[in-house]
Length: 248
Image 1 (spheres, rainbow, N blue to C red):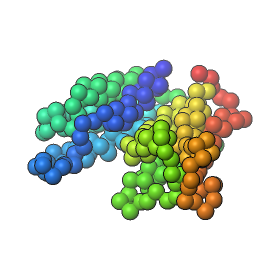
Image 2 (tube, rainbow, N blue to C red):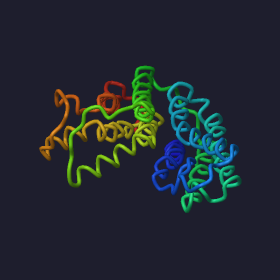
Image 3 (cartoon, rainbow, N blue to C red):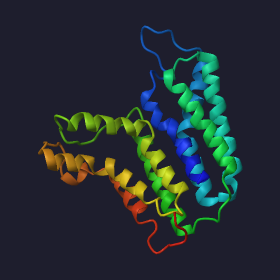
């Protein structure tokens, strides 16, 4: 129970990031942030994005370290959140500040209350490590300045804003957080459900192309599939096959 609460609280700031009023960049009419504010803001961003990844690999490979090391990492993220408030006021967070702070505090407490569990069977640990790394790699590739969209379906109507929101989720680590939730809960029956989540970005374009008859600029419809997410989703869905060890 505390393990579930911990990973949900640790990933909540990632999902709340869509509600942020502004980032730690600046617009032409704003003065650039001072170096301290920028450094703390960048550190906060990394801590928020990568805390779920750290918890996932702790749970998969060294579960006895998860309560203490995970709590320390969550506390670091909490301190960085408070530090951004100190150096920049309410800027960068807006009304979401209280929710983010509360989630990080809950994560710290829940991790401290989490009981160390037996190590996940190594085949399942490898599978979920691959799931997390595939999601993380896809997000990092999408966020590189030189990345391009490749080929895509020319969607219209409600399909277009839906694709926009899904693409935004790439950059905000939504799918990485979803994979991390499954990895932390990899020994439980609920974990494969995260595979369904990862199939959303994997199958959206081919589904939209098929249902809306949108044209595409691909040499083959197979290129419309987001293959890293498709592989990750299938691995997650099949992660419990022939490995029954715990129920939830």
